[in-house]
Image (cartoon, rainbow, N blue to C red; front, side, top):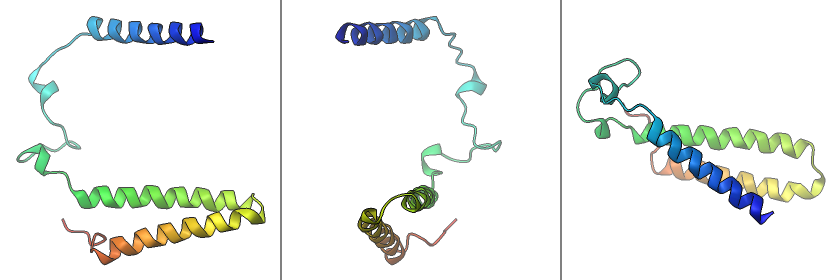
Length: 108
């Protein structure tokens, strides 16, 4: 098993470096420019990232995973109910913290 793992690791590294050295690298002006949804970037790209967008996206992912946990609870036994209640406490606690600190207000 160890021999197969070492061979797989060596093959992976060999293919990675082969791809890196054989790939065509063109540094054209259009390739190195920033492209943001079809619009020309204004100002520095580091300043255009909105932390509010990131927080909203993170909340969406958390609540999407919560729905998966709800579906899992429907198929589990009664002993999983305590874990489910603990999950809900953490999620609602995080939601309350974001509301308390004012992170849910969308400012453009």
